[in-house]
Image: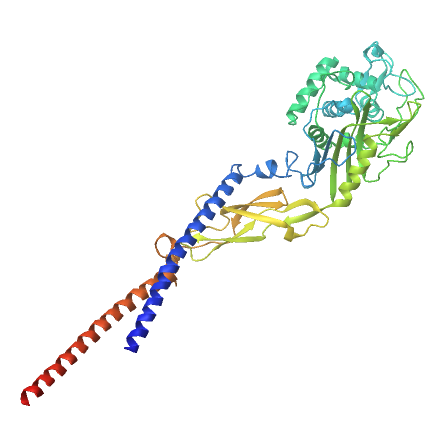
Amino acid sequence: MKKVKCLSLILSVLLLMQSVLVPAAAETETTQTEQAETEQAITAQTEELPFGTVCIQKGCRTINGMAPLAGSEKKLETAQSVFLFETNSNTVVYAYNPDLKLHPGTLAKIVMALIVVENCGMDDVVTVTEGIQSYVPAGVNKVQSESLKSNEQIKVRDLLYALLLINANDAAVALAHHVSGTTAAFLELMNKRVKQMGCTNTEFGNVSGLYTAVSNSTARDMARIVQEAIKNETFREVFGAKSYQIPDTNMVQGRKEFKTQNYMIDDSTLQDFYDSRVTGGFASYYESYGASIVCTAEYKNMNFIAVILGATRTFAENGWMPLNYGNFNEMSDLLEYAFNSFKINRIIYEGMALSTFKVNGGECNAVGQANVNVDTVVPVNAQMKNIQMNYKAVDGGLTAPIKKDQMIATLEVVYRTSVLTEVEVYAMSDVRRADKTGVTIRSAAVEGSKGTPGFLSALGTICVIVLGVAIAYLAFNAYMRNRIRARRRKRRAQRRRNN
């Protein structure tokens, strides 16, 4: 009887375990299913953008990047719009109101200079238009020492230096007439050229950027314009010049040397803002639309295009001595921030093994590799462990066979909230089908229906078998005990009869 009781107790425990664990497994399965559905929903949200656009719309890659590495919080005191772009790695490092339309002022002359170097030789001779001064508003910058004279013959080079170093508006008119015949025709060229560069938020109202309510641009568009312009060697030379002297012409002799009005690259006029890392630039100031500046700067292995639009300039009581230049002060702060806070790192190497990916029916997993080198700007204290790698296998998953160099996944590289880049992932080697290897692969565990773990299914099966054996044992035991009792009764009855 003790054996029977022990056996019954064991059976009860086993049955209890099955009744508790199987529902728990079902509950776990439900929880896992719900979690998977949530993850799929999140993934669906991030997968709305096709490959190649995530790092633009949700990241800082390319000049179109909408999520700058350093964010978009206001960092400068008065600038209405700021854009900081690293050209070697195509990284938008910082931006504040980058697509806000503002008056660009005489920064329009950058576009003018680009069109001139694209359409003229530097030694081409310009015959200055008759009555040139009637085309130039009074009181604005002109060629120093002696303004341009009617019918003066002067080279394109001389006019271009006057245009970009001292913002000479008579040089702007002379160049526009030389290239297109009229300033109106040249203005059409300017607006057409900026559209070709993708500057959809830019339109100029005249060739000099003066006195027009029509002109507007953005810090991002100005960076696009400079990025295109500095590809031209002649433009870069003039853009980074510190001084120039116009040789004698048929009308004027002995013009004095003039200095650039960009105090970031020359300290002979004003020492406060000189920065040896600045390689070129152009500044603009008018009271009605503020102080703006565009600069190129390089240090170590970083090359920046920095744009500030609409900064505020303040003056002393005399009304003419600047207390704060606005554009130069804030550009100095911006460049210090850029060079002191960031570095360039190579985060992806060509041939670098990235991750493994499950291959359905394959003899093994596929190892993915990159076929490109990727450099990006990161904060100076950033480490690779701070950078997140998000992989996505090709649509439908991977199924054997897989060929070497077959694209098997895509990768998003994320730092904090900004996608640094997107990379295609390729198979490092072939993956054959499992049935082609000569090896039979058997699973060590059986998965139950609806995802129930194999252990619990096996436990249930064992319980049923043990229960069946126990029932058979109890039935046989009861049968034998009944037979013994019947024999005892028969013997007792026989004794009574014999007595």
